Structures are given as C-alpha cells and as structure tokens.
Image 1 (cartoon, rainbow, N blue to C red):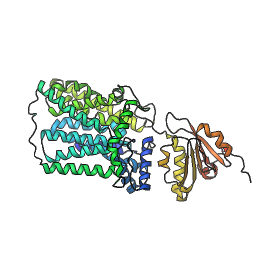
Image 2: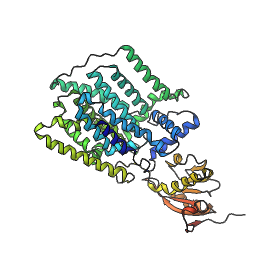
Image 3: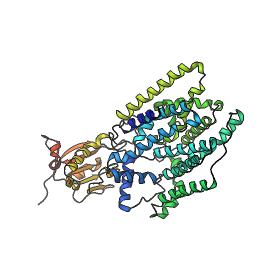
Image 4: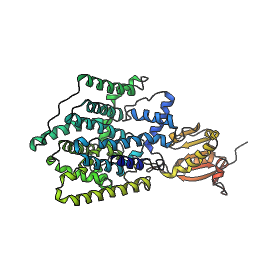
Length: 492
C-alpha cells in the first residue's frame, strides 16, 4: 500500500509534465540559472526573498538534461513525490492508518499536485519543514541521532530555500508550548520525552554540516562572500513586503477560500483540529496545533500567493487521517464512506485542474500563469531550430515590458533583443517580433518585410501584444496563407 500511494503520486505529477507553458516565476528562475552559467555562480540578492538552493538544483538538472521544460520541472516533481513518501515516515508517531490516509490525500490533492509540477521554491519549503517537524517528533518520542539529523537538515534546508522559514520555526516553538499547556489540562498517557541517545559529537556534526551548506550556497560557492550578509539583510525588505503586499495583498481569509474550493481533506482536518485538546496522541495534538498556528500566521501576512499553501496545510492532512481515531467506532462505516467520498472528490478535482484547466485563469490556483498564446511563437520557432540548428541565429525583437518567461524559453537564440521603456532596435525587421499595443504604429512604420500576424497575450493583467512572424521564414507553417502585413519598401 505505501508504494502504491507513492506510485500514484508519481503518475499524477509526471504525466504530461510539459503540457502547460512555463509560469512567470519559472521563467525568472530559469533565467537566473542562465546567469549562473554566464557568471559561474549564483549571486544571492537579499531583496529576492528566495534562497539559492533551488537555482543550483535546476542548474544541475539542466546541465544533465538540457534547457527544456522537463529539466526545469523534474527536480520539483521528484521532491513532491519524496514529500508523499516522507508523510509515511510519520507512522511511528501517528499510526499506520493515519499516515497512509495523509499520504494518499497529499498524493491526489489538487494543490499539492499542481504546485508539485511547478519549478518554484515552495515545494522545497514543504519538504524541509516536514523533515524539521518529523525530527522534532522523533527526538520527543525516540531521541535517536537520525532524528537529530532530520531537525538539523530540515532547518538548514529551510534557510537555504526561503526567508519565510522564520514563520515555520516560530510556529513550531509556539506549538510545543501550546501542546504542553493542553497536556496539563488534559493529560495524554505515555507522552514524556524519550531518553536522548545522541551525543554532543552528533550535535556538532549536524551543526557543522548545516552551517557549511548555508555558507557554501549563500557565498555563491565561495565566489560571492558578500552574499552571506543577505541572511539577515533580507528581513528588512521581507518585512516591508509582507506588510504592504506589493500587488499580492489578499484578505486574511484567502487561505480558507482556497481550502474550501480545492482541499477537502484539509478542510476536514481543519474542522477536526478543534478537537485536538481531546486527542489521546501527543504527536497528533502537536501537528494540529502547528498546522492551525502556521495557517493563522500566514493569514496575518498581507502578501499572499497561492503556491504557499503546500507549505502551510500539510500538517492538517494528518488530522484528516486521524478522523478514524476521533469519530466513535459505532460510526466507523459512515466514517469510511465519508473519507472515501472526500478522497474521490479530491482526485476528480485534481485531474480536472491539472490536466484540463491548468492554464485557465478562472482557477484560483492558476495565478499569473502564462497563457497558451505563447505557443503561437514558440512551437513554430522551436520546430525550425530543431530542424536546423542555424535557426538559433534568427533575429527576434520583443518590444514590450515584462516578457517573462520568454527570456528563458529563447535563451538559446543568440540574436533576440528585449526592448522596454521606449527603446527600439536600430533595424526593426526580424524573423519574429512581439510588440506592445502602444508601440505597434511606431514599429509598423519602420518595417519593410512581409509578416503573418497574430494577437498574443502573455499572461493576465497584461495588454495583448501583436506577434509578427516573417513570411519568408515561417511560410511552411502557413501554407496558402498570404502575409497579413507588408511594410514599405526600404529606401535604396
């Protein structure tokens, strides 16, 4: 059963992985990796809000597999699958059935699948926060050195991933205090901390390895020592962004709306978390407090993007599984039926979202997602490049602001220019152009060649651009079609 759950998670995450175009953030992350190739290291920017680890992992993947969407997304997919496997490792503390139900709910969840197929940082934060909490529970209940390593590597991994690690560490500490208070009010049998079998040498090794990893990556693999200052400089900007929202401000109930719309098992877990003071399992009680506390903390922050949800709500999936322990045994059949219906509904919603509406802006999870419109350019252009590598020398001009993910997608094309804020190439004609609405007339006055034209919208909240494809270069893709625009003949 455990491997069947992991296999199901793998199928849902790997199937048709490249079917949706690169997200805005994926394009930026890929572009950062391209700069690593040019500079030799990743130059950490404390105003970027993200640690360096993800970029080095993508760099390794693209080095091995090439610059393509599978190489960009595959590391995140594998980590998402590992998170499902890691859920099963909570079995000694929450019970076999609870851990398997939680793992199954995560394997088929619309959100965990959707953002497990995106090359963004949040899946790493989920992985390392799970590892951190697993280590804390393991030290509490078992006290062995391997759980000490889980705590240390989980903490180091969160620091290497995203500045919001401070929220998770703070909530973990507060959850321990609240759980202790609840234990005093309603005692849980056999909840005393286990004797610790690790030594101070183990602790020194864990701290040394974690610190070495942090220094190695934040220093740009020792090529950018000032990057270490970003470990504390980043919080000044981060606190301002969290307070102001910077265009991503949402109401406090934003996460509840997402949970209600997509994550039925999480909703069950959240409702049954109210029963946590009466749960006779100290680990489940702690997970309930930690999960609710993290949700409250993220609700206070004004800056909200939907992909953060996977790092927030995973503890509540264990409370969903714990419904079997909470509901009296005389209602066991009704409990089985209810849990089964919830899981089937979650799976159906996941398939609908991830394979049929993954680029539909009406979906709340589809946030600043690139439209399929970009295929009007990328499919014929990349086809030409695969037919004849000399086509990587085709001239292209993108005359508009905010063109991501094109800078990454077209990174292998050596003669593509990007023009913003009124800038214009000296010679406007090229094999292809993308032109902002208010620049179309200026551009067309300077064109001399013939072009096929199409409207092209890169993503929501952005005006529709005009795509120009040279009739000479792309005529094989438009058989029998006359050029839509022909410029004035060039002056001899």
